[in-house]
Length: 371
Image (cartoon, rainbow, N blue to C red):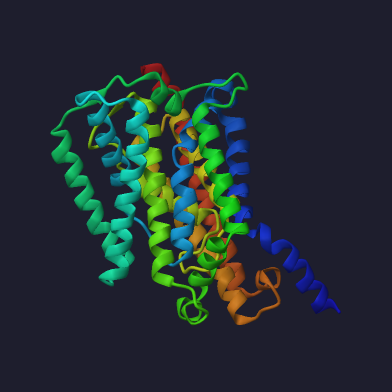
């Protein structure tokens, strides 16, 4: 009876495992910043900025969740976003097309680039990592060739509204767009055949193929969705800056993949959480904003993101191993020596992040004084 009760409790907790990690880290950041910089961090304008920054990655995180769940990865989202936005910018600024033509064309271009990624992977049997990395170089090169070092700026108001507009309800327009895409992704993942097939393909591509699922076709669908959402993010970035150039979005790939992995979607496929991806995006936006608020140099931001990725992947990999081993749930697994090592490792990572924030808090006064 005790074993049955333990399994029952684990089954009840299982749907929420994906968001426990990011929510604990979010709570830690809120507590730390509430002590270190409560006035600056929690002022309404800064909270709006966090939402606005997070919304830029929400469409890509939604699509990347499907790609990673199918055991894929897309390292070209940053270049797809920039190239799509540059093509839109040339249509509007150089050739006089309406912005209402440029926006859908940009999204179609992004979908086309995603289709190319999917075909490279499925038709030529190129591994996802190598294929999308190579196409990232291609798209980045095309963006540089087209832009020729130019900064295209001053777009119609509709585009700036998409990137940085405000609503009477305090929530920025891009945040509404981002949360809407996450909600659509949640419905697709939970309520459609495509969502079920995505999880099935990630769990076992061979078994999915045997049940009649066209694995290659659905992988292409996921990359097309990823390309279209990357183009949408490129439009939001252009509207936010009211400008676009070929060298923008250097860390898009890292940031999006980090958010999805932190949210509990497994890099080994078969496990997805759209709510977790949303929490991961919020966590990284809050963390990076905290680093800026504390006066920590920009170059430390990828370091902090890397710590979060390592801790998250190690934790979720450990939990999946416990599932495969048939243990009596992850709670009992924490009592083992391996579980204790994992707890100490996670504590060390969180401690490193807190130490990084503390260093910034100590020197924040000097930075503000010198400015």
